[in-house]
Amino acid sequence: MKTAWFWIVVLVAGLLQACTPLQNILLASDERIDRLVTAQEYGQALAMLEMLPQEGPGAARAKERKRRQIEALMADYERRALADARRNQAKGQLADALALLDLAARRVPNSAKLQEARTALQTQQTARAREIDERILIADTEGLLRQVPLLAERIQIKSDGADGADVRRRMKQTNALLKSSRSKLMECGTRALDGGRLDRAEKCLTLARRIEDTPDVAQAIARLNDQKAARTKQARAKKQRTEEAQRRKESEQLVEQLHEALAAAELTRAQQILSQLDSLGVKSDELVGLRQALNSAIAAKVEELLEQGNALYRDEKVQEAKTTWEAALTLDPLNERIQASIERANTVLKALQELQQKSALP
Image (cartoon, rainbow, N blue to C red; front, side, top):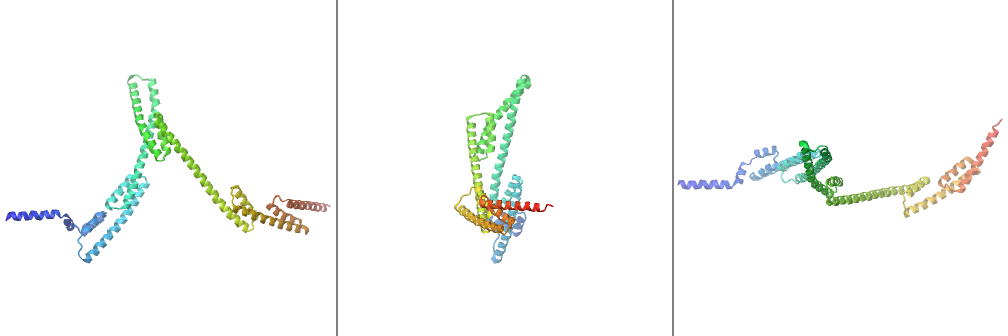
């Protein structure tokens, strides 16, 4: 009888051990879920919520309401974590930003936004760390290269004794360090070339050539010069395209202004605009038509002003006639008829002035 009870107990214990989800369900409770939410462990809280038994429609609605509350808190936490990480990133505190994202990713599992931000941050972190390592390499190499001639001079001055041996040993160590740095500088230069960072590539490759000028350095520097020439050509072409676009935009605006000036019969302004278009080298069928329209309008206006001046002159209003002819001359500076009329008016005005002066004498 004891043996039978023993095996029954063993069987029940085995069943309980195999059914750990059942144990978790029994352990799950609203109180434990609330503690996890308070600790901002939202992923664990949602997982435990799923373990709660669902009995009746009321329990199902309560469970769904609880899920929405947790998900809302989790979304708010995710936004704040991303904002805090971006602030640290902007300050250059990349390690702190990454730690924040790691913590948030644990609390909000399967978050695409957090994973995307973390991947971008790691990429920036790697690039920034490599950039600083390259700067350290350049600084160390420059320091070693400055030491070499000083050590050589020191050996020439006094190479015997313990201090002389010390200097020679230091010279050997310096040369060994430079040899090691050269391979790193070549890697730096090649990597910078591949990434289009020509200033960094030039710095690394120039230092490598100072250590030892070999064919591989010469080849890399030739490649650097080709890229620099190509970039200069691209910059020049881009500048030219920008200038052409600017000229095109300016010419379009001037053509529009020319239309407006012609419509308003502002012929002097239209002439000035046309002169600006000529200086820009603008040529088009539209501009040819506008020029013809302007010339016709000027010719008509000049004739009108000439007739007005002649009428004023006949009425012995010489000064008014001269002013009218001068207005015509601004539109057509080479018109000989206008020039002759103004000259005639000047002669008459001068004669009148002389007569007035004589009549004023006692």
